[in-house]
Image (cartoon, rainbow over all chains, first blue to last red; front, side, top):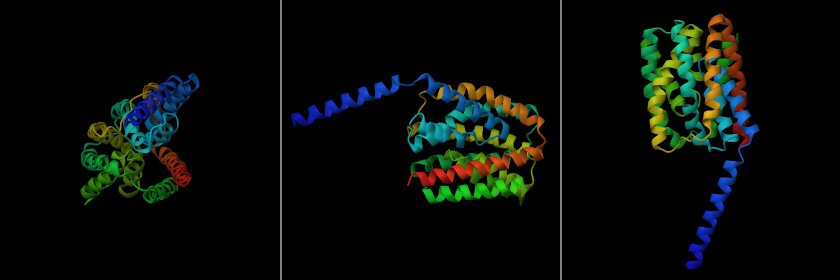
Length: 144
Length: 121
């Protein structure tokens, strides 16, 4: 029993110091890469009025080593302030109409709350691939 | 009838938005393709509805401990500047051209998504 506890504390210490090293290892290059990604994400999100989050998720996973669910949730936190800036400019330039905004917005908020609770059961791969195929079809339709 | 479509499209996109899976990449094409709305109008609508939705979504994700704020300020800082620039630039691009560019963006994103899904196997 005693040795068990000792082992546990040893592994705890080991993992803590490992974490610390990882934290301090955030190099200038990584920081620069994050800032460059921010520029791309921000530009796309402002220019296309959305979609920045989809570019943000893989960066959070690969560079900041967030797990899949955290990356998806955190992407929303990253995109929020960026969308605030671009939304302000879209409103200023008159790209808003009250009727579609209110009805669509109502749906989005309702769906968003559902989706947020559903993150615990993040959609399996099959759904993601179907989603991507629909997106591809939509993209082709928009180009033609 | 259109009212229902607006709400239903909103709900579908909202679910994916709340999951952090690209609500806007779904909402904008739904509105432009099926309801013939102007591309830039849809982009504006998407941004504002996302902001309201995100307030609720972030609260739920925060409570579930899914939000990791460490180091994200680096992405946000440059992102703030460029999201302003992107939005300003969009104002000068005709909606039709923007619509096509958005189509290309969707195709590229979807190819990456499929690639990512297969890579993890």
